[in-house]
Length: 590
Image 1 (cartoon, rainbow, N blue to C red):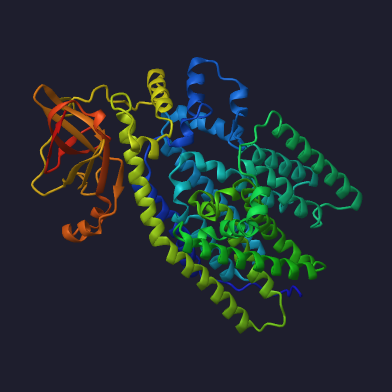
Image 2 (tube, helix red, strand yellow; image 1 turned 45 degrees about the horizontal axis):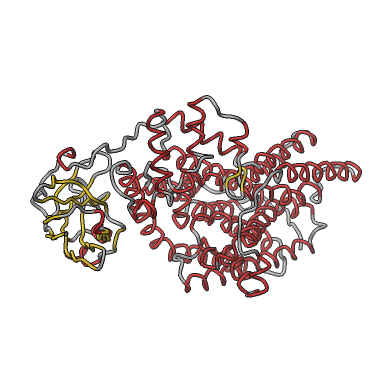
């Protein structure tokens, strides 16, 4: 395998502009999706004492370094804790700021990948641009919608940004000691950003000490020893007083179902190119992950055989490092999560790790093919065009379901925010447990404390009297109704649909009221969850109506006794306005 020297082909200015627009389309499209679906509401882990509690301790003046060092599941989020506190104090803990931070980290990662790619494919500018476009499509994919809509998930992107920054630093002409110290500092930042941040020390080792970046064998050995010592010191510090989460254990899974471990690993790597977390998607993800892993192994073998070619090695080392980081992350996830089953590997939260492997191949395969004399130029182009078309096709097949899931997730966050506003006045609601915080008592206590401390400007409803909500009659066009109401054993079941009167999209939530002799009209509950209603979209000629279905299961013990009339109201979380839906139910509750 040789590295032919040739003059780079020049692209006209209009081609540069067109390709730049193509690279920018994915982040712009994602930004528009985020603008539509992002909701300012704490979600699950964000209610924990080491995140929401940070603001209370800050305002009480009792915040210590131990609060930043506090373990969060498997991670020590020292840097993210500082970022959360800074953004929260600037925004009154507006979680959309953290989502914007995740987006900006992705922009930074995509920019660094683009610049690394320009050097890798410096003689083929068109290929470099097209590879950059493909990388942009994958990095800003809505298939990772859980990460985009959860402010906490910026922790996933910090180690990746640190790794890419290290690769760029190592290619500069800075003094060797400066580059070495900068990479070490970035590895430390990565370590205390997320649990897989420790992998940066391992992933960077080959490029720092095997790629010829340090002059002199003695200097390389000394630097490698220092790197190893720094890594071990960080490991020892990281696991000081560490509490290992209780799991079924990798070895137990290996003994019972050894193939399940391999299936989890491969599915985790193939996750970004599949669309639904079901059994068929597990099979597809496993297949795609296996193909990518095998292709990476073949490319690495070809590179190893050409290791005496310094021009080629300098171009491929960054991508071997990035792909290795993605594989190591998948291995780490497999060790900790394989007991959850392969379907858990398809979680949209962790797609960025599989993206690392795919992006590395997007640059490695062209570089290796271009340095294979046995292949003609025409065959190289056909092979590259086929692989690019395959990636784009798989992504295009995954995107529609991902956009729909992102829409549903945004609506679920609106329901979570609605249940948050009623935390102080309603009995425990299913929607609260599903979409806000599984520990409702803790969420209620924390929400009241945050409001009293002035951490956020978000207010909780102090009453559930209907008269205090400015009830409005339904507009002329129907916006929803109760379609079914029936008592089943100890519960009341309700089904129906609702649109927001001001926006003609699915209502933020639906609240239910009861009234009767001696019972003042009062809100007694919110919907449990949404139901897909394709029939509504067709009947109303409104595609948004397919997300407008709802259901409610209410214990009869939550209702007052007597002859009751039950009504449903579309609720707008930002204004607190309720608008009457058609239909009602009558209940004789004795």
